[in-house]
Image (cartoon, rainbow, N blue to C red; front, side, top):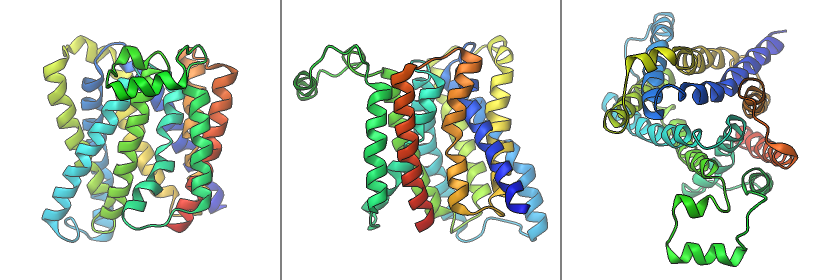
Length: 315
């Protein structure tokens, strides 16, 4: 019974995270992407404080474990990487569907083992297989069927260095490319957090890195966007969902649920985040990615599950 309860909470977590892509899209109807990220990550950071205080009281902890200065420094680095990943994702959502963004972001699971390879970890054959399947899925999902550019012309374009948003849009969705870049930063972020979490409290690291991400996002927004209170008020529901529910509530549910769940099954359930992103996009945004897109999503989900299951079992 405990296992089923834990898995139900994990499914709820995946649902909250998946529908967060809808909130991210809707929020930008009223405010800019950096303003949205700045406010939601501030809310996310603050929302973790009650859980941190509660756990500190239960475990009789008073401060960050281990090297205090080292934890601060690496948490700040994690915050910068998170800022880059979140920024590419949020801006990418201006140009692509929430459902597609959910699946492409999920590719970080496939990318993580390849980054770990740099640090001497071996890549399992299942991870390689999953990566290949996911790349094929990405092709069907993102490469436009109407493209008139032949393969040799694409390579010529790359070699010429004349790569801009207009040329890129001729053979791949610009938003999808930005979200793909975000997946690389999220993969790097996962590797760093995996290393850092063994040296300090993961919740305290998260609260600090969210605060850094918020600070950087708002700083950039002040220089590039017009921030108006009316827009923030109109975007209040998407902001609160993205900050309070997606970060505070979902993160708490994950911490509680994973104590009683099998790691491999937990990884598979959390992977359904991308499926909920598609469902949310269809219900709330009227998105439809077509048969080709759904086939690509299926391949990507299969590849992500293969890579994630093996990665979780080995970690």
